[in-house]
Image (cartoon, rainbow, N blue to C red; front, side, top):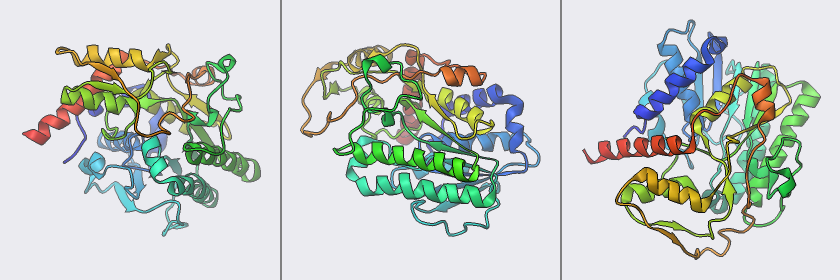
Length: 362
């Protein structure tokens, strides 16, 4: 059953209105998206599909690649059968079967395993897609002379920042362990950024990369096991919210629509060889206070919030205590700012899950 819903549709319409004529650069070109069924990249597919439906001429051809290890086929099921989209099931850590024959103009490389629950389950696969997968995409970009490539890195490359580096700017070098349960993700993302920098320096490859900070919203797997999907699952099932920590760690959360708006601006720019934080800098919130806010958004009968100790002894190992982006570079380079408050974003996300659940039980 399709997981596309009215909330995502509203988001796409606002993204199109925000980007306006900028997206006309896609006319008559081919965009390749890896991780196409994933939480973030499915929004790019929806954006282009809607743009084509609105009369972009010539239309933009989409190539969506995914091996569905963590992506959800049902998230993009509503796009099946379209003549403007080619779907390829493939693991991008392996060489592309059609490399050199795609005629690609743009690349968005979002394939990866981002949830700690999943990347700890698949550590070698996580390293492979971040390192080998990124190398394959950079090689494709170089050979085909693409106009632009956007790579999705992560705010986790900063590790657990010094309090003096909060909000964290792009030039902060990070405080990251190369060993431990999170290292497979953090360190392979850091190496992927080095690959992006090196390809730009050696070959002039027009690659940019972004470091998303706790992006959330409709389309995220409910079993993702990160904090907001866990809160959503509790709200949908009307059961207690269980926090497996003391709740004092802080984060800033960015609604997906704001993140995707920023990423389109970056992809379509000349900011080659540059990195941008993408997130919402409008106030840190503790995980404990986030749970209380979710309880308010879910409404009565109000959910109980419990603090428990996880059976997984590494559940909080190397978990950063604070995470807040400095988005000055993004704000000053592009006509962008985060627009969706945390309360509104949580409400929209919950509504999207409720809509899907209603369809499933109908």
